Picture 1: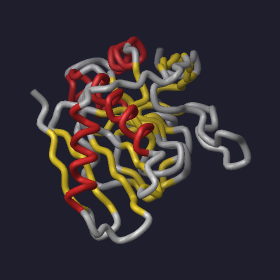
Picture 2: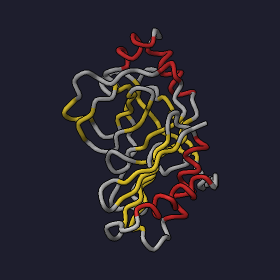
Picture 3: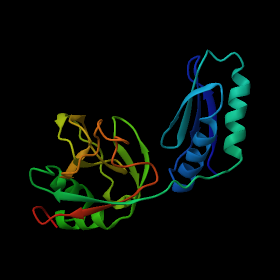
Picture 4: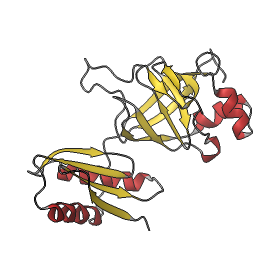
Amino acid sequence: MQQARYYLLGERAVVLELSPPVTLPSQQRIWALAEKLNHHPDVREVVPGMNNLTLLLHTPQADAEAMLALLQQGWESKERLTPESRQVDIPVVYGGEQGPDLDDVARHTGMTPRQVVECHAAAAYVVYFLGFQPGFSYLGGMPEKLATPRRAEPRLAVAAGSVGIGGGQTGIYPLVTPGGWQLIGRTPLALFNPHEMPPTLLRPGDSVRFVPQKEGVC
């Protein structure tokens, strides 16, 4: 059974943290609890993460035990929320300049570059949460055999749209940023646009499929 831990984070936040593994049912319970506590008068903001939920409070918490008890009670209710899910296809050019680490991932996993692409593109992914930077989606569902450690030396600038693997996770960089994930491809889609509403292409609960393009390895 997955263990839950509850603790204070400074004077204005309380945290629910779950032990591994990360699963879709757990994320659905986190989404449900976030939705429920988002309307609590003492809560300024809810921040759902991967296997965790942080509540930011309006004022320094005078009755910390009460807030932690509320968090525990909500989690133990075992309510789930399944957001309205969309199927989002992400076109990806794998390998070459768009995916400079594809060969390294292939060597690490004992596959050919084409097999890595086929395995990565065949999986069904779900957006577990957005974090790290605006629009960066952490996806559940990557096959374990694709797991590859992050680069020993992170890049100073990763191009927007880069598709990467970091440990047992895969995701898409929405903006130019430093990063240490293994880059296997790139999409031309804009993952974040501050002028749109909502500004992010992907949302928690969305189903994602990567579609290899003929310009790359496929």
